Amino acid sequence: MPFILKKIAYLQQYKNRIMKVKALALGVIIQLLCLTQIYAQVLLNEIKVNPPGNDNPFEFIELKGTPGSTINNVYLVILEGDSGNTGVADLAIKLNQITFGSNGLYFIGTSLGYTISLPTLMLDTLIFGVPGGVLENGSSTFMLVNSPSPIIYGIDYDTDNNGVLELPAGAIVLDSFGWVSGSASNAILYSPAVLTQSNGTPDAAVRFYGNNTPISTAAWYCGDLTGTGSTGTFDPLRVSFNFPTGGALSPGDHNLPNTLAIPVISSNLNITVFPNPASNSIQLSGIIKPGTYQIFDITGKHIQSGTFSTQQLEINIQELNNGLYVIKIIQDASLDCLKFEISK
Image (tube, rainbow, N blue to C red; front, side, top):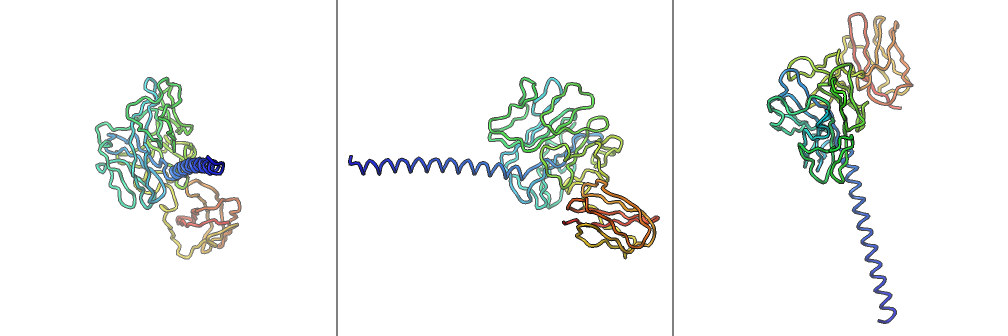
């Protein structure tokens, strides 16, 4: 073959190799982008495991994601943590072609126990209506896993009970948390996010509104429930140390407490907060008597408080972060709640 033809053939082979490498690289980039999208889309949001009285049909699990987005090949998994069965999948639900409502919420439960209204979308499944309930009340790990291969109910994913999961190849944990039964001494959890409370085993857990950090203890509060099976009320004597003012279950709606759920209440129609948004300070006008004020962030955490005696009050907020806040103003028997925003 003439030298020039050999040269052309070699260049063509080289070009083909380059195209294959580019195609492989593009495939890897697409996979990474897809995984990044999944990470941004789906979180555990609210879980009710042990309703007072009969568990069924009042257990539920609520997810949170990008409004209107769709997820595929994600598994909702609950792993046994008590001795003898650690690592066994007590629950495994495949979430494929699951679309979040326009409010970013997706409810998994049964309409026998809850009426869920739009914009929240719902997986209405009778497994949450079986007698005795379907969710484990003891030591458990709750997780969302993206996996190319099925995760199967009843399979032991920690066969040597060493606390290291043996998930299918390529599986990625997107979000997780766990808790230990109050009576367990050798439980195993499969998440670094461990929820605790003053005593006993949590009945339910709620992600703080506005906290989208996956696999984070600080993202959650939990506790025991009081009332009947459908209750969303926590027992104030058996809750986590970070339990917020106004904390409660809110199936199918934004988590409590949050500024979306706190109405503006004013017994004095002349009271105002300005500027709004604010940066360094806020002022309140229309105050008619001496009193006290309290500032709360969107999670219900008490941030700041003080007293006042003049008709116009100025409050320094330089140390507060950007976001939405509520200020309570108490004058004798009157209570005013006003929302304001900090934007620096």
